[in-house]
Every structure is written in structure tokens, then in C-alpha cells.
Length: 150
Image (cartoon, rainbow, N blue to C red; front, side):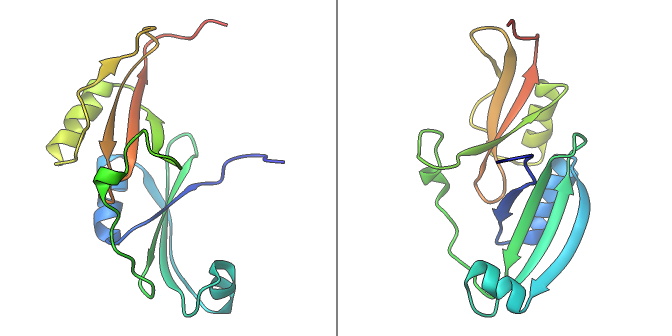
């Protein structure tokens, strides 16, 4: 049934802060910046009077993050302490980087919350760490150290 992954959508409270993180800190490129409102989006979301700002950002491999700020239906922010890796549901987005230590330092310089220092997996395949985006979503940063066997 599935042919490809189109994007990952993230609802945000502050578009400027989220764009700064995903574009300026993480290095994605803005490819769409638009507003959606009217019957189409109201029907699609099954909500009245939707007015949503949408910004799509693309990684070098073509994967896309879609940021959505619905100014007509603001919701309270989630509690980051209740978004743990062990909780049910979609928990994180993972990205491969060339240098995990450099990525760690960049995120720290920008004041991003990181859960740990980079650590090498027991099989020696990857070195990784987790951080949070401005909305408290978990982001996994991975450097592949060697090819997997088999």
C-alpha cells in the first residue's frame, strides 16, 4: 500500500522559533511557506474556521518536516516530561549526520535540551544522542560508524 514517506508533520505554537530550529540549527531548507484556510482544510481536519500556517523544510536526502501553526485552534503545549522514549505513540524523529559530536556541540550552543552526551551503541554500529525541538519533540541524532553485517 505505502509507496513512500511524504513528510512528518509537527504542530507548533511558535512558527518563528520552530523554523529557526529546523532551518538554522538543523540545516533543513524551506521549500514551502503558505497559509491554508477555507472549506477544503475545514473539511480535511473536521474543524470549523481552520487558519493554518504551513512551512515545509527538506533535508538533503529529500525527507521533509512540515511545521503547522493553526492560529484559529491553539492548544496548550504538551508537557515535555510526558514525552519520554518509553511512552506509547510516535516518540521521535531520527536523522543521520556526518559528525555526531559536532551536531551535539551545535545543539548545545543553540541552547537545545539534550538528553545525554553522544554514546556508541553496544554493537559499535552507531554513535547517537537525543535532543528536544522547541515543542519538546524528541529528535535522535545518529552517526553511522560502520556498515551492518547481513
